[in-house]
Image (cartoon, rainbow, N blue to C red; front, top):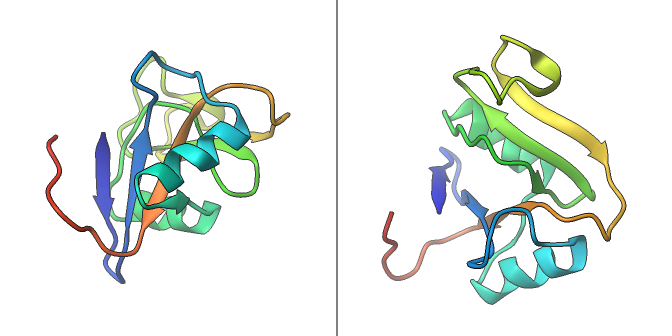
Length: 115
């Protein structure tokens, strides 16, 4: 799990099912975030996390049913629609039955996390 602490509070993190990459449809993505005490991150929260340095080369659902991922260090396989520029890559709004990972948001971290 990758975490990004936001300056104004809250944490955006990448969540992947324990079975394998890209297995969550949109409803399952919402349930996965809820199961860990979080919500699906909004596009604005993911962008703020990117601006704080969050870099994750994994496509994931966000709350508007779009699929995105934040890249601060462009590299082969992670260029997306921005080529060699840093930014939040976007696949656009997707069908809810398609499968990806998910970006979750939690206002306050409780307990401990292992990275």
